[in-house]
Amino acid sequence: EVQLLESGGDLVQPGGSLRLSCAASGLTFSNSVMSWVRRGPGKGLEWVSSISASGHNTYYTDSVKGRFTISRDNSKNTLYVQMNSLRVEDTAIYYCAKDGGYGDYLYNWFDTWGQGTLVTVSS
Amino acid sequence: EKVMTQSPATLSVSPGERATLSCRASQSVSNSYLAWYQQKPGQAPRLLIYGASTRATGIPARFSGSGSGTEFTLTISSLQSEDFAAYYCQQYDNWPLTFGGGTKVEIK
Image 1 (cartoon, chains in turn brown, cyan):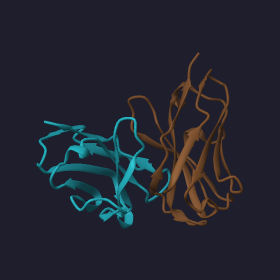
Image 2 (cartoon, each protein chain N blue to C red):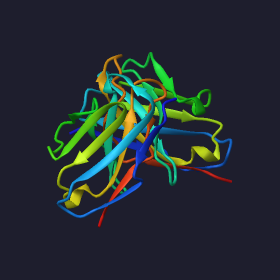
Image 3 (cartoon, chains in turn purple, green):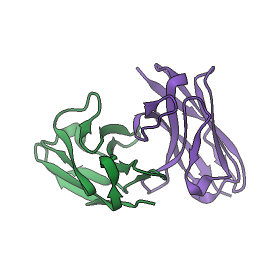
């Protein structure tokens, strides 16, 4: 069974930084395309970022470009997102999601999701 | 950016009845690159449909997707108690990937 377990969510002040992690098991992580999707309070789902299996190709929504960095360590079966210059509007539950694609080929739909980790940006 | 609009925001349905959820795109979604997800409170989203009409692994046949271009529909043929949840559509035709605001299916 594929399992994705996020961690690292916390309360942080505006302008602060946070790194989220997603530990994966039950899959060939090194061949899996991975993404982060968030859900703000009272809002719908919002795609944040995706990374190819090799880590060579990354993609971001405009609102986080230059502030967030997605990465992965295939030796540890772990996905990361480094979040800098956090804003109040970044407050959300952040989900780690596995793309239906493989290798460097993204399908851009998500067949497995984690339970999420809560990030609160507030002074 | 393709804006996805779902309607209605809330749908009240009795168990055993049919539920029809709508998803409209602001621009045409090529190749029917449209997915549907279910999310229950406190749980992770679950993929139901991709390619507008292909059921994901393990999804019951009572869930069906249809549509093309700018109009898409998710139909639940006979609502079971476990189907009361929020449903989201998502286009993956181009970047940024975008989701609809969701439809909450509640017990009537």
